[in-house]
Amino acid sequence: MKTITLNNGNLIPQIGLGTFRSQDNAAYEAVKHALKVGYRHIDTAAIYGNEAEVGRAIKDSGIAREEVFITSKVWNEDQGYMATRRALKRSLEKLDLEYLDLYLIHWPKTYASSAETYKALEDLYEEGLIRAIGVSNFSFHHLEHLFATANIMPQVNQVECHLYLQNEKLLNFCRMHGIHLEAYAPLMSSHVKELLQDEVLQKLARKYHKTAAQIALRFLIEREFIILPKSVTPARIEENAAIFDFELSDEDIHTLRKRNRGRRYFPDPDNIGF
Ligand SMILES: NC(=O)c1ccc[n+]([C@@H]2O[C@H](COP(=O)([O-])OP(=O)(O)OC[C@H]3O[C@@H](n4cnc5c(N)ncnc54)[C@H](OP(=O)(O)O)[C@@H]3O)[C@@H](O)[C@H]2O)c1
Picture 1 (tube, rainbow, N blue to C red):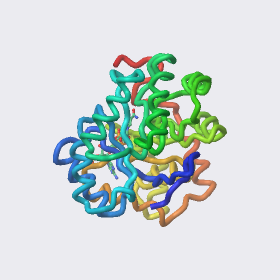
Picture 2: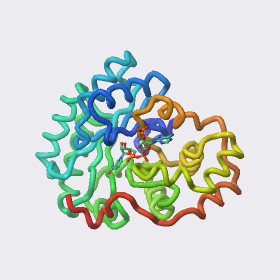
Picture 3: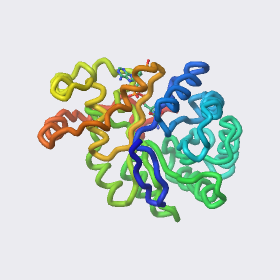
């Protein structure tokens, strides 16, 4: 798996298996299959309710802990300094791990709560319980406020990103600050069918002898996103990772860039109701 170097020198595999809405045995089997076929990066979160299954699958895979990159996220209700420390301990217990490779603030709430929560992440990082820290669903103004109080630059910002929501400006802004963007919902989540019917994706799929999903994911890889496609279907888990044996031409990337519609399927971080 191709890796990217974070701003603290740690390596992160450019593809991780997403696990949102993967439950119980399906989550366990998906993670186990992904690890078997070469994935070394799993994205979970406390709110997904599957940390125990994810942890068990990693253990049962027989792959050494240090070879797998594991991310979790602190949920909104656990924001604040002490609550975040407790939330990390709970996640580690469920996952049955000594440390996480990446821990993120799942959604921004107020600037003050982000600052406090992030302070907890910095301390947990210094204590060695998390190897990298970051945020999720942070736009420019959330990041700018965070920079005013943070001592450690976030390593990652995980945001919704796909063909119809390309986030070019946020990508450039984060790049300028050494923050890597992770694309969640890279296949447009529950709107995946709509994405796969996109006529340009279909045309390029025929040209490159790949699937429309693979073209959509490869497009994000070429723009240096870390991508987190979710699937509980073994063949799709394999399909989504088989995107490192071809490159899109500059002309085709240019054509795909023009498909951007600025269309969000997840809540606007400035207007969340949870
Ligand atoms: N930080 C955040 O706030 C946040 C929010 C959302 C998601 N995430 C993370 O990002 C990950 C990905 O996002 P997501 O799960 O919402 O959506 P996604 O990965 O864009 O799409 C998942 C959907 O696409 C289907 N699918 C996967 N590969 C396919 C393929 N090759 N061909 C056809 N269909 C395919 C899956 O079906 P099957 O599973 O049935 O195969 C599932 O219905 C999440 O799992 C989670 O880890 C983070």
